[in-house]
Image 1 (cartoon, rainbow, N blue to C red):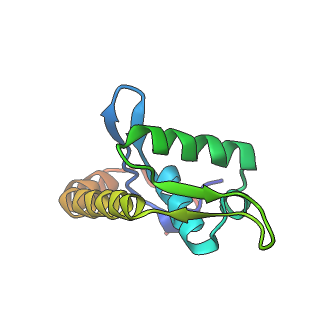
Image 2: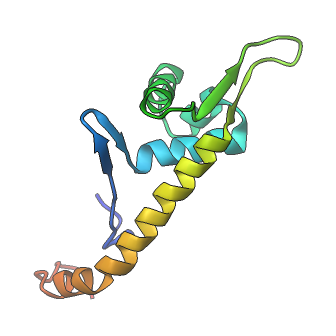
Length: 123
């Protein structure tokens, strides 16, 4: 069951080119890689396999001129991953777009919410 405390919510997916988009999942993955320094740890936190997280990183790296994530192979200290300056810029631009959409959509979303049928058991 959906948690109505988080409702309404606006989810923004930006289709940049055929087959190339930036959305909340990719943005969250970048943020978690930035925080953890690891693709595997970021994926685990999101409930996805390393393979899936790596596929998303490869997709993002392939979408833009410059890579968003750089991976270092294991060694004495083990491997890791770093969000590049390009990745930071992409993430900031995506977050700015989401915030602009949230502000622009606030009135219409409030209007839509006001037209909803009452949900049994809620006040």
